[in-house]
Length: 160
Image (tube, rainbow, N blue to C red; front, side, top):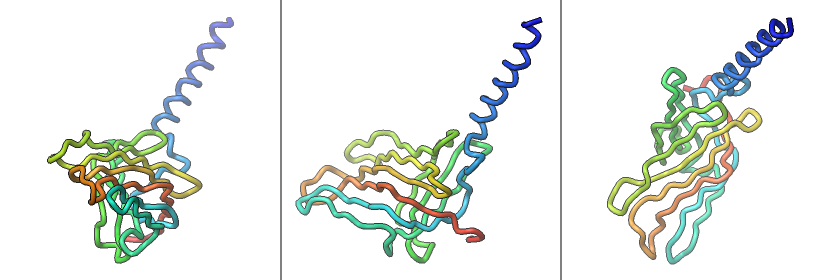
């Protein structure tokens, strides 16, 4: 008798867990589209001049284009200039998880393509973006580490 009551409850709980894992962003899943950057920092580091800190948005980084392919569980992201056309930096092969999107490349080696690790998550109806890109050889006078911190971007409804 007790067994007959426990099994339906266990099945209902299992279904709830599976649905929340698959549709974990359902309350605010980032949609494909254009997002306007409202705040954040971009830091180019390190060379003789030390870190160069830009407060976002700025003319070179005012928007984010996000494309999410829910069928494949993948995403693409690009930081765009004020004209919404000029690409400042783009990332592909994002992996979509229930609570975030992760953009990761293989660790870079001098002379090889750049490496990066970026996380895109939801924050009160907006995207929150944090990540670092290593690009180019280690050099004492040219920045080779580029970081976005606490970037907040809001979806622009109807933007194409």
